[in-house]
Image 1 (cartoon, protein in one colour):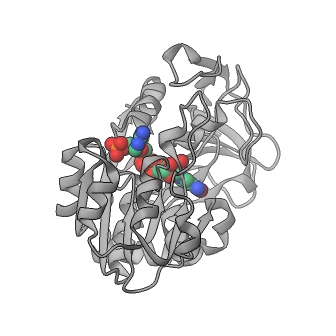
Image 2: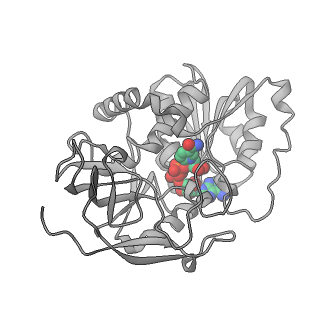
Length: 339
Ligand SMILES: NC(=O)c1ccc[n+]([C@@H]2O[C@H](COP(=O)([O-])OP(=O)(O)OC[C@H]3O[C@@H](n4cnc5c(N)ncnc54)[C@H](OP(=O)(O)O)[C@@H]3O)[C@@H](O)[C@H]2O)c1
């Protein structure tokens, strides 16, 4: 076994944010590194993921993911290289994905690590298009929204990790029209020019309902909701009879300190016989094999493109997370641990 590092830097939550997270709510601290125990591996993280759902874990409320504990390292998706192993099936040099991100070195049971193939795709892709956000797009569109050929699809957060994949998958599978919304004119151009959306608009440029109506004059059959609030309201108005909504995220409300208003037009669900389906990626892990096979194929054929915004250096981990909530990213926001 080679000489192990003595310490690892890791991001702790030190105060629970009220509204927008602030730099003072987080601290980068050093912790000792230990050799892996029986059945365990020590991983040098190369990339870790920052995701909108982590904002929810910063609150002390019961949810599908446990709250982060104060003065403990935060967690989340990461990929890295095994540097010491006492776990059957794992050797030094293996690349793995696991859930102990936000730190330089992670010591964990072998059963919590999944080997990933660096020859199939760049390692960072296993946190995005070939990872959790890609699976969310795939499962949300094909299972939760019961997408079928000929559907007109609207996706919000369309230039982000989930949204950019949703729109392209809908095109690949024969959507009649794909419309996206995003928070800058540059992102809108990218949606049309690079990702092949039929129409897109900047939700900051005017009322969402009006812009959506113009972009989808014949209405929409599927709404993939990443944003909630005004976007959901507008989508309910534009949905056709028997339309379906994959309720994936509501990022416009994650920093809210007051209760948020319900859609004012929810009654349309009855007259239009709409279906609103909440979804969580981890309920769809059974799809993983099919998902990786399909998505790797579309990446190889060039039918599917993906973007990443990589923030360099573990010391910029908080700033990457804050930037994600601000919309600094195009595609998946990722922190490269080593600058
Ligand atoms: N249900 C699940 O299992 C699951 C899994 C993964 C993700 N999600 C959800 O899916 C959504 C997208 O996640 P992601 O990982 O792909 O993140 P992302 O879209 O790559 O990044 C977040 C984006 O949200 C946009 N945003 C921020 N504040 C906004 C606001 N007030 N109104 C409209 N847009 C806003 C920003 O883009 P703009 O520049 O366009 O504003 C930002 O880039 C999130 O709601 C997330 O919680 C759910």
